[in-house]
Amino acid sequence: QSVLTQPPSASGTPGQRVTISCSGSSSNIGSNYVYWYQQLPGTAPKLLIYRSIQRPSGAPDRFSGSTSGTSASLAISGLRSEDEADYYCAAWDDSLSALVFGGGTKLTVL
Amino acid sequence: QVQLQESGPGLVKPSETLSLTCAVSGGSFGTYYWNWIRQPPGRGLEWIGYMYYSGSTKYNPSLKSRVTISIDTSKTQLSLKLRSVTAADTAVYYCARGSLIWGSLDAFDIWGHGTMVTVSS
Image (cartoon, rainbow over all chains, first blue to last red; front, side, top):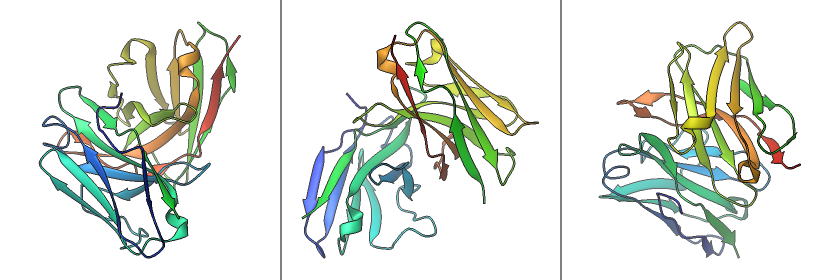
């Protein structure tokens, strides 16, 4: 049972816009930045969004992050086959004094 | 550019100590927070803890009693020791570079490829 809650799966067709949600609480998303990591099959996670809305250099601008209260979302526009991966949200939890991850969302491009 | 490479035994017996190292190349430890994260087969990510280059540490409360993270600055290596392991500790173990913002962990911007550790007799 993860501290941050993500849907286990999401899907879309090429060119579509897909969003992945991440639900938390006042001690994590409600008071700290959210991070998103993309994990392609068989590889290490890669930073996709940092400080809730920022993209690191090299991350496509098709990816965007947002937050509202104790929830966060990752939006992917112009979906491509290479976006098929697992996506994880993460945030610092003040109550646990630990970094917590969501359970991950497997994105399938149909 | 900075690269991280984990290494260690792929098989550890139950009740023994898991020991891994992470070699940092192409850069120094300075001003960064060096983390261990693990991922059981087919499951999600779990943060284990970090060590700052100056020596301070913070561990996940769920593992704190069994974990020690250390840094050998002369060898630019990060180490992880996890004591009294069980099958539940079977996972891919990653090291990752991070920083702090407002006292909380910031992004993990560089990750190693990970090393698989199986706990079995």
